[in-house]
Image: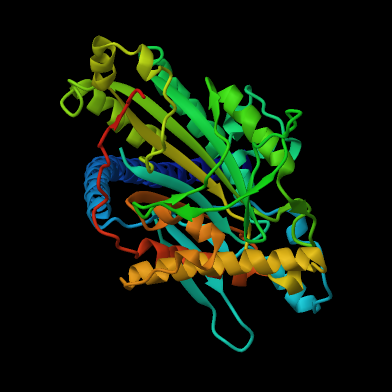
Length: 478
C-alpha cells in the first residue's frame, strides 16, 4: 500500500512536470509562430512597396520609351531632310541567312581556319547598325559598326557573289524557277513588290491617264544587250546596243526596245523573258552566279492638262505618292510618237493637243553582278574573263562615286558601259538607293568588309539638293 502511494506521488509529480514542460514549449512555439507571422506581414508590406516601385518604374520606362521613339522619329525626319538637301546616296544593308554552300570546302584550308569560317561574324544590331566581328591570327579581335539608312530614283543591289542580290531584287521564284507565284507574297523581291505598288496606285487614277513602258538590258563583258529585242520571226534574243550622251548631257540607249504593260503580271512576264537570256555560270561560291549587270526600267507617262499643270493639288499629291511609295524617277526626254497627222489637224485639235502635256517618271531597278575573288570562286576560261569585266565595272562605279565625293571637275563615267548607262542615276539629279547584300559567315569576311566599305563611302557622297524636273513634254502634232 505504501509503495502504491509512493508510485502515485511519483506519477503525479511526473505529470505536473510534463504539463509545465508542455506549457513552456507551447509558449515558445506560439512565440515563434507570432514572430513568423509578423515577419510575413513585414515581407508582404515590403513586397507591396517593391511592386509599387516596380509599377512606377515601368510607367517611367514606358514614358521614356515613348519619348525616345518620338525623338527617334523626329531625328529620322530631320536626317531625311538633311539627306534631301545634301543629295546623299541612301544605303541599306541586308544580311542573308547562312546557306549550305557557306560550309562547303571549295579549296583545301587548315582545320582551325575551316572551324573559324563556320562562325557568323556579321549581325544586325538594330535597324540602323551592322556589327562585324573582325579577327586575324596574332591580332586582338575588333568589332566594327556600320550605320546606314518627281525625282530620278534608282534602286541598286550591290555585294559579293552569292550574297543574295538577285534574291533580294527578284525573290526566290524569279531567281530559281523563273516563275512568279502571286500567292506567296511574303517571299516577293523588291522588283515584284515595287511594280505591284506602282500599278495599285495607277489603278486608283482615271483610266488612260497613265501608261507604263518597260525596258530590260544587261551589261555583259562591258557590252549592253537589249533583252527584249525580237528578230523578224518575233523570237526574243539579246541584241547589242550602245550608250550615248545626249546634247543635254544625259545617257541614252538608241533603238532600245520599250514594251507597254498594263499590269504587274505583264511586266513580270517581260522580266522573265529577259532573265531567260541573262548570262549565268556556276562557280564554287554560287551555282547560279549571274555574270552580267541587270537593269530593269519602268517609264511611267502621265497625261495632265496644260491649264492646270504646276498648279493642281491633285497632280502634286499624285507625284508625291509616286515618289514616296513607288520611288519613281524623272528621266531624260524621249521623243513620243504622234498619233495624229498635221494634215488632218484642225485649229481646235491643235489647241486641245497643246493643252495636254506628258510628264515622264522612271523607276530603275538594278541587280549588279557580284564582286568576285578568283581564288575562292575557282573560275577559269570564259568565266574568268567575265569575272575580270565584272570587277573592273564595279571598280569603275567606285571610282565614279569617289570622283563625285571629292567634287572633281571630271567624273569618269565612260570608263565602263555600266557607269555610262547609270550616269543619270549615280551622278545626275537622281536619288540613289544602294541595297548592300552581305554574307554573315567568317568565310566571306573580306568580301563583306569590302561591300560595307563601299556602302560607307557611298553614303558620304554629297551631290547637292536633288531638283524636281517638272518641265512638261508637250504633245505636238506634226
